[in-house]
Image (cartoon, rainbow, N blue to C red; front, side, top):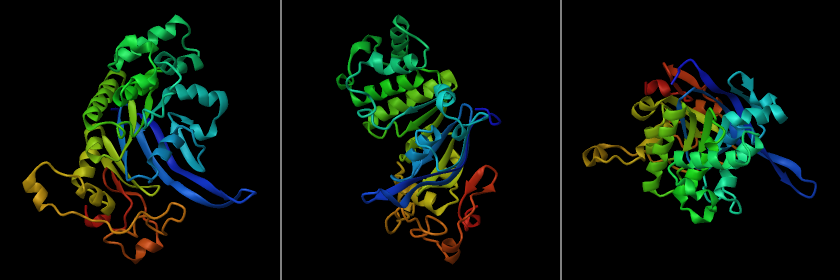
Length: 329
C-alpha cells in the first residue's frame, strides 16, 4: 500500500432521494441517505465501510461510481472529479472502477451464459471480440477458481458461492484499479464466505487492486481491511487503522458495535461489558439535529442536540465525530 498515492478521494458526499406524492408527483421531503461523507483510499489499500442495515453504506458505494448522481460533494478518482464528467469521458473511466454486488442471485442475468456475462464488459468497451472474448473469459474463470469449461452454462446451474465468483470474474475483466465490494459475502454460507474473502485478498496481491469493502460483519472486516470507517445514518462516525478501531474505539457507537461481537475466549467474554443500545435507528427522512447518534447514545448531552460534532483527528490517523472523544483517547 502506497500511503502517498491516493486513488480515490470522497469529499463531503451528499445523496438525498426525493419523496414524491400525489398525482403531480410533488416532492414532499427527502431521504438523507448519505449526508456529508469524506474519506480517501490509497492505491493497493482495503478500506472497510461498516454499519448497520440502512445506514447508507451501499448508497455511498453506488454514488462513488456515479450510478446515482450525488446531490452535492465531489468524488476524485486520481485527478478527475467524477461528479463533473459524463457521457463518453465517464464511460472510459468506468473501466478503472468496478463493483461486486451483494446478491449473486440478482446480479447475474439468468438468460445469459457465463461467457456472455463475463465477456459483456470486454465487448462494450471494444477490448475484445469473437474468439478473444471466449479465451479471456476462460482465463478469468480459472483466475477465480472455476472450471474454464463452464463458459456455456447459465447462472441457475451454479451455487451461491460459484455465482459470486462469476461476479468477481466480471469485475476483473477490464483490469480495474478500484473494486467496490458491496457486501459481497453477506448472502453466502459462512464456510463459503472465507473462501471468497481469501480469493479477494489473493487477487489484490496479484493485481495491486484497491478495495472499498462494504459489510456489516465486523470480524470479516477486521480480517480483510487496512483501515475501517464506521457509518451511522448517512454519516461517518469513526475512521482509523484497523487495530486502532478495534482496540481503542473513540466513538460510543463503535464501542457498542464492537461489544456485540463475540470473542472466542470464555474468560475474556465473561469479564466484558456489553453496551446495549436503546430505541431504534431514527428515520433518514427526518434525522435528529446535531449528532445523528444522540438519540441512542449512552453519554449524550445537551451540546449533542445543538451542534453537529466535527469529524476530526483526535490522535494521528484516528478520526471521530463525537464531542466527547477526548474521554476515550
